[in-house]
Image 1 (cartoon, rainbow, N blue to C red):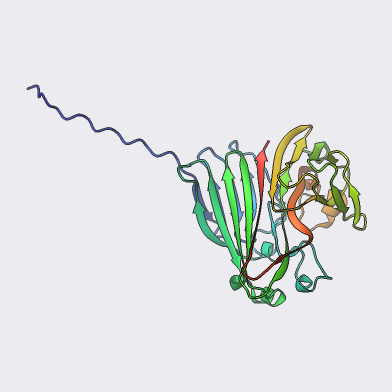
Image 2: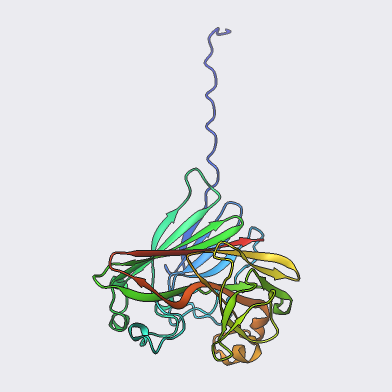
Length: 313
């Protein structure tokens, strides 16, 4: 019998778009995030060190030493170490004079605070990590007895990676600090690499007794390089890494007034125990946004926020 008022078929509910996945692996020592399009980032909780950043095709964008310590025994050689509260060593700065090189953030166990995505977006993910005076090792507390809180965020998008740091003074007295994002970029051949965007900028040459010079043209590499630039065009003007004349990375800074450019070349790489292979210097260049010339003073209750955004050019 033909029914006159047959019920209509229920409309199918559209499937939700694929979402980024976040995994905690290696006995809860690493956090990784993968976008539906294939991009991936991996962060070691020791130092909140970004170990790997891959594009949708699986190509690695960061250089990591083959002998980097990933077991928490020492800072990681490669990726993106977080430098805080001192860059290098500062024997003449009383508050940080006893700290190890580049401070303690890169050699402390951070806490994974969780993930977040932009509302309605499936094409990005942000991972948050925390370190505070409360969870520092007792020996480190004795060397730097200030109350602080650090929030480090790693944001992955299809064409970019951003890392940001918020420093809060939770104590009753002010403290001074320096900070830097020590990014190791993976490149095909250092001899064909140029860094532009720092033209006409003053720099301190750490290999020439801290002599101050001015950059003329793009930076090319023919030997060990270790320079602290104060960019003439400000933080929003991109610093560009090019390979054979073709841009590959664009770096934009926020509230980080200096850029360190570093390559160890033959002798320094060979003399560095955890730098392998020995000729790995051919395949990396460090371009490191930071606040390292002088000191940032943070009063009680105040906060400092800074970031870098790296875009695939």
